Length: 123
Image (cartoon, rainbow, N blue to C red; front, top):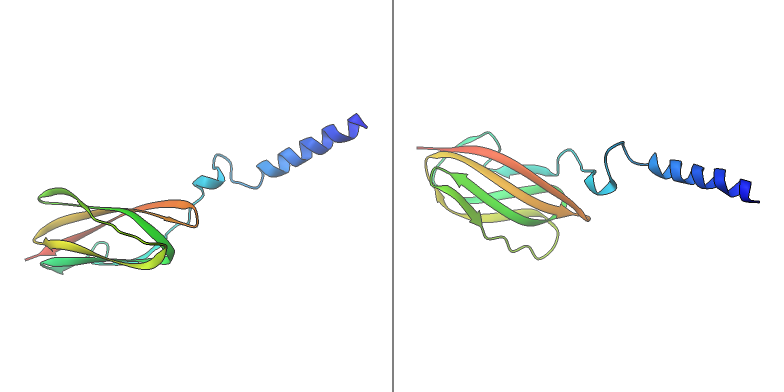
């Protein structure tokens, strides 16, 4: 009877390992893109001032953190997410001329996501 269980346990162990790509745990698996679009759009040049940032996700997500880096330095933005939704509208302090980088962090269905978008505010 002992000889039956050893190969069976090895088979169960090996089949469990094959379920995930090598070197990645289930927690590290992520979608290629969860952010569908933003306003201002990534890579765009817009007229200023910019008073609002819109982030639209492909599926409901909880926005955890947003920072905006620009000519005046890094400024964290207040995020008050009450649940997982697809659309976020974040008030900004009237961004004027310059290059900006937005870093965001969100979670959806128990997974963590982060991303970066860049845009320029023209004169």
